[in-house]
Length: 81
Image (cartoon, rainbow, N blue to C red; front, side, top):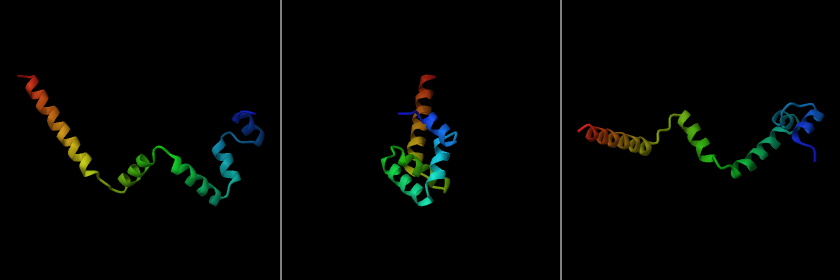
């Protein structure tokens, strides 16, 4: 079977994304995205990033980070003794 570059050159495109977009309807693209989304290993990261952009704050993580910082400061103070 021909490699991706050979196929893309033959159809006149430099990258597969542009080729797929030119050949699929918006509905087909949405369906493809949905199929791939449910197989995606980084759904949580994408959702967290989008929610963060809207102002979401993970208060549990903020609290944990604060406690870690205070513990590190405590350890460093006792190293100076």
